[in-house]
Length: 458
Image (cartoon, rainbow, N blue to C red; front, side):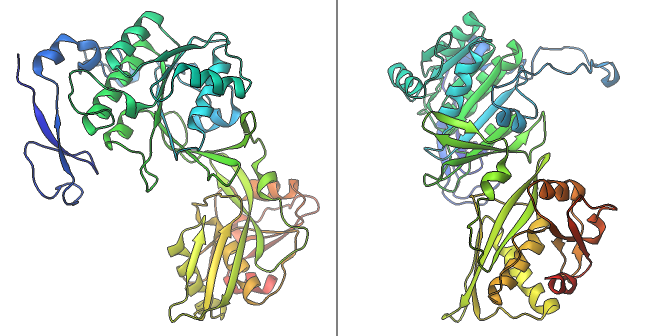
């Protein structure tokens, strides 16, 4: 018997070391190295289909190829049966791709993939591998969601060797693994979910997907801070990494791409969790603009750009006299550090002091705004709450604010204005560089250069 090899792997970043040490040299974390037993040389050689390294990116090629001679014929995609899912994927599922879907417990990962699998099974061969639930539990959930279950092939298995043997025999178009943390290889002695098991299991599954032109979809767990569990190399192996977000108190779920080799990474898909599963929301602006009939100070609508489309969301600000020596700055759905910077710009270039106020900011609907086009809307909402003055309901705002008080243009300004006009807004405050030559019918566009100009326009 060949002697089993062992390595010390950092549980934070996945770096490997030949011997134990107190601090990881890569991520500088202390006491994060744990010993994992790797497969023996003989066992690796005896099962090249599962643990061999050749052919990881597809067919093995022994000769170099000129880049200009590579066939540029577009790989045919096929729909996942969800338009919002296809949007985040970049247009649909690509044969031979590996997709990792993560999310908090209860977010709806298994529900989304089960719905997708049942609909795809009507036109494609799909194998759904469950390692966390029994077949009867999955069948009960599919019955509760009233899904078409005919034609969907199910497998309750956690062994990668057995799973790949079945997949090679069945030759599915789509292979779904729920979840990767429950899978294990027999020649690796560490427990399922460990660094070595997740890494080697993912590598074996990805290799099979590339070589057989199968769409591989993996469910991944997340840690308590919201990041994907397992070694960081897992995210490098796969082609697309998606995160399904949504609290238990909200019926809306957002699917956001964190990595995508076949499309944009900033796309956003919106779903509603209903009695019969997830339903795609084709017009997200409509749900995020469900405003109260009575207008209140600090409420304002802004236009953010998500991937290839504009979305209208409401931002709310609340300012109150602080009883603390260090007033609070709390932002939900926005960068808290950027809020502090914007308040400093408001004081310096707008003449409004908020140093004695607690500032609370919230983006309605649980949306996370990652771009800087929300700067101007945030400041005007803060001013509205500070002065206890209502803003017009028909007003929409977007624009980036610089440290010198200038209003900078943002991408796709024309499309944002058109989207606002479609939803009945008749007045817009925008950066001068984004002002259209001819405003949409019924829309008054106010172009501003400085923060003082925007405050005066109110």
